[in-house]
Length: 155
Image 1: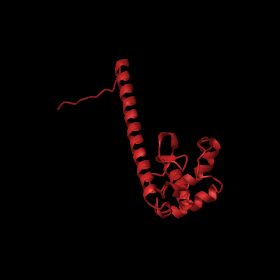
Image 2 (image 1 turned 45 degrees about the vertical axis):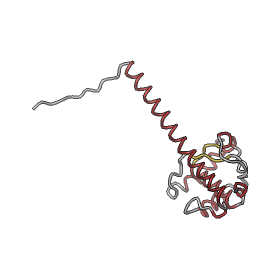
Image 3 (image 1 turned 60 degrees about the vertical axis):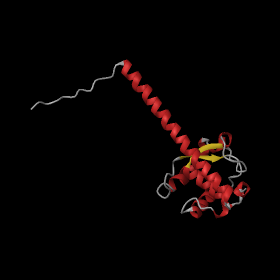
Image 4 (image 1 turned 45 degrees about the horizontal axis):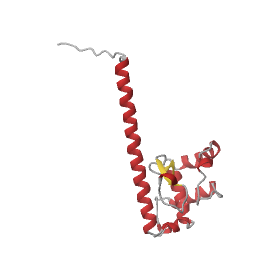
């Protein structure tokens, strides 16, 4: 009976370059696939807004709880137009963090990157979207629906 010994060797510079290029290409492919999925999600949501009364639209099983806790945490946040710079500041991230973590176990894909319309009066476009977590998307879009902001999107 013969035994085989596998020795892990450090890759040569040429092999490392190939590995790095493959890794970069794979990461770019993953980002591209994510972007496609995020846009599809945003597009489907936009079509829902245009085809039905947003006030009747349920985005999760716990919309009322999400809305209540969102407005308790952010009573003055204007959901008509999101201030992207303010929302992504360290101070705002620290305000959002406890709310986001509260829904970690309650909301599937709570931290998944999702495209949010910046200006609720406009549709989905590269210029009118920003990347947020799924729970931030739900908080803001549920508020827009309940507060009548998304009513303007109906055809």
